[in-house]
Structure formats: C-alpha cells, structure tokens
Length: 102
Length: 154
Image (cartoon, rainbow over all chains, first blue to last red; front, side, top):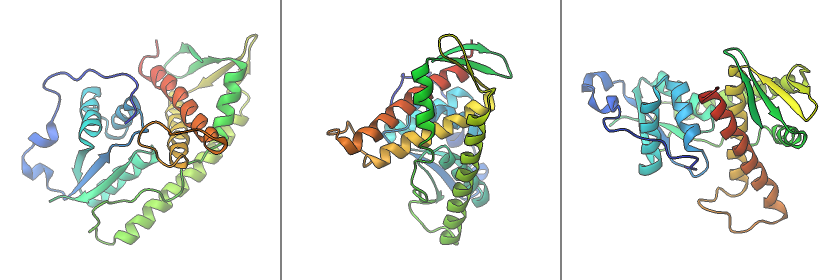
C-alpha cells in the first residue's frame, strides 16, 4: 500500500470482529481487502470509513492490517451483503474479495 | 491547489491555471481501469460463482457509464470552475468531492495497471510509460489534497 503519512494506532484499537461471539459472525462469508502498492493508506482508511461507517480508529486498524499482513478480514456477512460490500470496495478501486468463512 | 473556503454544503479550492489544466487532462482519462479486472473471490467455491461474477462486472460497468456521464456534466457546469485573477476557483459539494476521489483513484490504479502493476519503483521510464506514470502520480497528488480537505476542512 502506498504511504502518505503514518497514522497513529493507539493501543486497544477496536478488534470487535474478533471479539464477538461466534454466533454473531455466522453469516458465512468474509469480505477481505488485500494489499497493493498503489492505493494510499489515507485513501484506504477513508474508504473503510465511508463504506462501513466505521470510526477512524477502526478503519486505521484494518488499513494497517492490510498494509502489514497483506490482507484484512473486514466483515463477516450473508452472501448478499458480502457481495454488496465487495461491490462498494471495488467501486473505490480497492482490491477486495469475498470468501466462504471456514 | 488550496482549499480556500469550506461550509457544510460546499468546498472551494483555488487552482492555478496549469493546475486546472492538469486536473482536466487527468479527468479526461477516466475510465482508466480495465473492465472486469477484479475477481469476486480468490478461493472460489461460491454458489453460482460465474453468475455472481457477471453481476459484479455488470454493476461496475454500469457504475462507470454513470460516472462518465456525471463527470461530463460536472465539467460542463459553469458554476464549478470560475475564473479568478490568478487562476480558477473550483466549487464542489462534499458528495462531489467524495465521488471525485473514486474517479481519481480509478485513474491512479488504472495507470498503475497500465504500467504493469509494478511492486516497487518503476525500473525505467520511456515514451510509453511516462504518460501512465504522470497520470498515476498526479491523480495521487489531487487525491491527497482532496482527502485533506474532507478530513480537515478548516
């Protein structure tokens, strides 16, 4: 991911997706954003905020996960909703896919 | 380009004459990303994967057609660019700006794809790659300035 300025990531950054009980995450499809060297970090953060309505900290957390780990699981959803989110993210030219949750 | 005024309804930017021309030249490149570039899934195994992929491709293609029309309308609207003594004033709503970010990123990512999707620095520039490199970098510059305006309008 291309860098503009390094955003500050505070300790205890939201990790709601991982902490929710499994039953909340059941819908079956994950939406994943993959790293690329062209999208600016600031832009990716902004898109996450717009598409998912996330607070900046949560959006930055996932952006940094994409940047440092190569991908981030953004949400777990029903197939229909996952398709919707992938469409939204690809509309912004981000590299996003949906996968069956294992 | 500088943000000179921001209200909840409108953002106004000052652009030099050359900056305006660069922005118009860039926007003229839209759409730049190759159609049907992205798979819906990497691992596959989705029910009716081909049908879902076709729907996604169709939705993105429709979006581009709409964007192209909207872009032409925006550029033809005399209230958007107003000539000043030292350049131009560009007026956009926050929604326009949000949308323009998508357009500019299509140009940025599309130019990068046309450069061969390099992972690092481009090995060398030549007659063919220079134009794509220019478009990638310049669209990025405008993106950064528009993002700053959206995040810190004061």
